[in-house]
Image 1 (tube, rainbow, N blue to C red):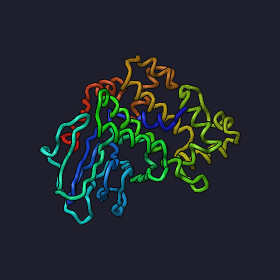
Image 2 (cartoon, rainbow, N blue to C red; image 1 turned 60 degrees about the horizontal axis):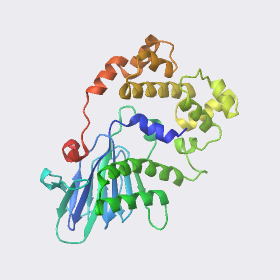
Image 3 (cartoon, helix red, strand yellow; image 1 turned 120 degrees about the horizontal axis):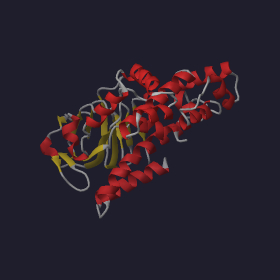
Image 4 (cartoon, helix red, strand yellow; image 1 turned 90 degrees about the horizontal axis):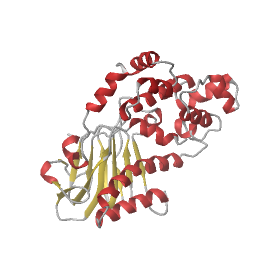
Length: 324
């Protein structure tokens, strides 16, 4: 069971939106907050990222070719050739449609920088704790053989954007979608086992990881702290302490969270009747599911389903409009 994929899948509310940003020094672009997580990939040249809306003050970050930035909460920030360059607000006229993505062009006639910029639509109203525990900014360098798979994904994106051919319109969105998993896997693997904390440690813990896998594989099973502890090979009390310390909540609280998350995903993405949703999430009846769901989400399952289907997703080409 791939818990990272499932955790992200539980938060996804649509396809990622992306544009290519092309600047020639001097250039500076202020980007507003987005609903989800932001990302940047430096395809060519160098630039600076100046965080503005992070939860904690952050220093400007120098970026080089192949660098990847992931901003957990998509906070407002500036991209510029130099931290001292004045930044302008993005304008619709800067957006020039092109295959397979649109391009934002700005700046003067100095050295050029090319980036892939965009955001992943994630439901931040009920974030999975794995995502919530990520740092505000993840900065990964793919030079000198580091993070080979991520480097390959960046190289494939660069090739498709610089030389679009038949199929590029379908390939690029898939690569951008996959980039999120490559970024988070690379960051998790960077954490030293001896000092890893929270979910970075939980996913590799010999006791907690099997329990998490069991919950994700079969959320409808009648799990108890005792049965999960038995899988972990620990006493009930020792297991509960270890699970809570790493995951951030007790085992039964996480089980309820994942059952509700699974129910919400089924309601959004399938036409399964409520009886089937209840059965697949460990609730004996529609009534039991509805009671638990309303307590967690503040609305009945049927209403949640109707509202979810009525919402419109923004298109990738309309990123500039929807970011405002």
